[in-house]
Amino acid sequence: MATAVSTDSAKRALLERLVDDAGLFPPAQLPMRLALRAHARHRESAYSWIGGRFVVPASRLDEFATARALERAPVDLSVVLDSGSSGAKGDTVRADLERVERIRQLDGVTVSSFEARLPRLALDDAATKRIVADLVERYPSTDVAFWYESSYAAGWATPPEQWLAVLASARKAAPANVMLGAKVRCGGAAAGATPSVEDLAAFITAAHAHDVPWKATAGLHHPVRGTQGADGSAVAHGFLNVVVAAAALHAGAVEASRVAEILAETNPRAFVVDPAHVAWREVRLEAEQVAAARARCVAFGSCSFDEPVNDLRELGMLS
Image 1 (cartoon, helix red, strand yellow):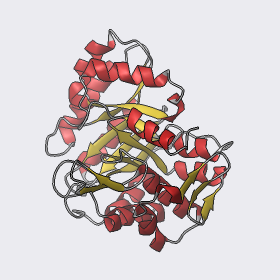
Image 2: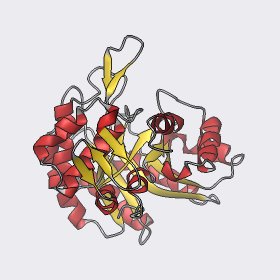
Image 3: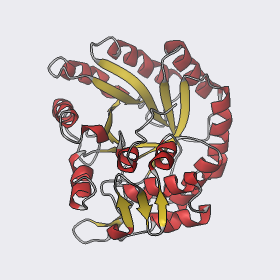
């Protein structure tokens, strides 16, 4: 149920609505009004087509409503259900959804996505079933996505093969307008927050095997994997690595065993993004292949819109 992207250009298919605006989150942590101003500015830029939803915590929706009175540009929200500090479930989620109902009444505001980190594999629990039931009641026919994030700290709390299989089963029971998908965290300030190449590859291959759509968040500030920080001691995943690896796997252009190889790539010249095709080394994908993959690898959240766009321009991929 992901929004279709262009099939006329491989570049558009890869980058269209790829970057969700997470400017409220670290490390940017913009004040609400500044974040909304920046989002409106991005929507008016030459690269507005790359931008996606505005990501906001449910705990800050009242603040959003106040700032929204001064910033009137249309906005599509992805709401992070965060009232439960140890994980969003049960009554805390219901309280978050009530806040969302009030926000949905504002002119020019849509809410098409929810995100939640659950502390354990709980998709079969009664509490999680109530979350889905609440979404169905509030969105009886409108398309809405719910992104489930499993815990990661220097390793998966539950192997992706296991929790994505459970999610795939839950998807079968959901109505057609409610898309249940996965969310993978690719970085963070805490020690052990950045998954290894092998652990991230395990997620991507398991999501593909179980036909589970997903979005990424955190750490994907630059197109290609490389070092970051003043001392160059930290290594960050690249969003091109992640999306191209997923697209190549989805298209059958690489075996699952090569996903980690694409994720580990550090040479920007190994990637080509142009209207004719998207490529990594000898692997080439046409526009329709990329667009089909984007229905499963949907978006990634970034605290900066300008940073990934400027990096793509420097690589000559947006010229």
